[in-house]
Amino acid sequence: MTPPVVWSIAGTDSGGGAGLSADQRAADAFGVHLCPVVAAVTAQHSRAVTRVEAMPVELLDAQLRALADDMPPLAIKTGLLGGAEQVRCVARWVDRLRERAPLALVVDPVLGASTGARFADDAAVQAYRAELLPRATVITPNHHEARCLIGDGGAGELAAPALGRALCGLGAEAVCITGGDNADIDGRVLDWFTGPLACGWIASPRIATAHHHGTGCTFATGVAAALALGFVAEDAVVLAKMAMGHALRHGRAAGAGAGPVLARPGFGDDPSLLPLCSWGEEPRFSAPRAAASRRLDLYAIVDSADALQRVLAAGVRTLQLRIKRPDAPDPRWADTVRLSIQRSIAACDEAGAELFVNDHWRLARELGARGVHLGQEDLLALGETGRAELAASGLALGISSHSLWELCRARSSAPRYIACGPVWPTLTKAMPWRPQGLHNLRWWQGMAQAPVVAIGGVLQPEQVREAAACGVDGVCVVRALGETPSQSVPPLQRALRAGREAALGGQTPPLPRPTL
Image (cartoon, rainbow, N blue to C red; front, side, top):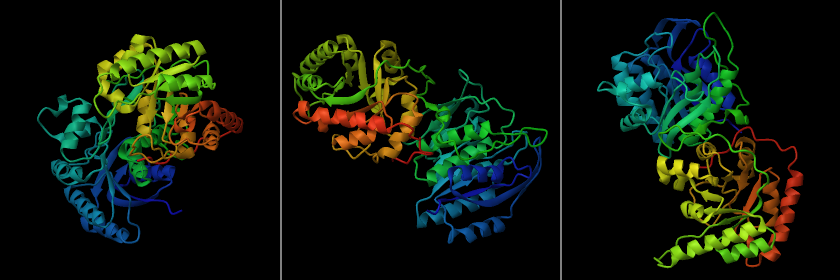
């Protein structure tokens, strides 16, 4: 298959550390084809930049024109552009290309070098604001660059979340403010992300190394590569963060100063590189739970205490009570929910089964339940105070996840398990996500560092077997239970055992597949 094409419009680095050299390595790590378009030439080594010359606009335009018909990009990444005219040239080409096909634009606003050299004058910064930010899919400034782009008026006092909102106010669809130059929190480097689907901190352990030249270029090109592969911005930054961590681990000396980071394939199946994502503006990340004493196995989701008792009698020992709110107001509904939870807790306690109450976590806690299941929207709606209260309750927490960002966010709450779904198309609820498939289920299982359960569209014993063969801790069934669990459950249990026997030696896929 022909790899996706990404253009990098950036500067050369005569020392081979940053710029187009770093971009090429990052593109190779993701398996995309990079077209390196020279916008500026620098004379530099590992300790200093001694000269910068912008490429004449006519020659920059000629490079882009030569590529446009034969190798049109799915994503463009910009780095060092050299001046306001070069910025405007790029903006014109983005518009032309978007008239033909969708195009992602990642803007790494290279305004200066870590050694102190300035790469952009006031006119160039203004051109970034006027021309590139309104066209950008994602911008990846550090804190200093973010403040420069905002301009005067107290921007130096703004925290990262406010900076992100301000930059989106200038037209960018999404902003990732990188924090590698800032102080750590609990040994973690924190980047702030503001996007159309999610906002929060991205946290990864600090990698102690003196060789970090080219991290910004590597990260931005990783975002562009992931966008070209079909990931949304939120998931693209997660993959780019993983690739950058991998590159930092392989950094090496190349001169007397800071050596380059070396992006390479192999980052996408290393669970230690998967970051945590916060639920809000507070960088709260819970310590992982201790390993559970039992596997979740066949996991039945039922809508009443009566159905729960029939499933218990059939031998299932992991259950979720999910009572949907009625379409029309029902004054008896609250009493029905309370009674159903009470009866379900008593029945599960007597059978030695593990129960998760869906949604009604405060009532579940009041009535003595030990576990609850919440969706991501429910957890977001709780706010910082509600999430802190839930964490302090001691309830075992199951969390749904449908995308990389949601997986990373779920991991930050020390869950009892993370649900991966929908594995197959499901009719139980309307969802915007593509089915995860067995490929992503295997990836979740290998990467989550928490028990994973498969959910969504599991209708037949063969699907239970296929899901269990991915190594997951449990497989959720709803409609497959039917009206007579005493008949439906035994073949489902046999399929689970058969899948478990086939799961030995399974490998984590090198990368997940997009779900949005």
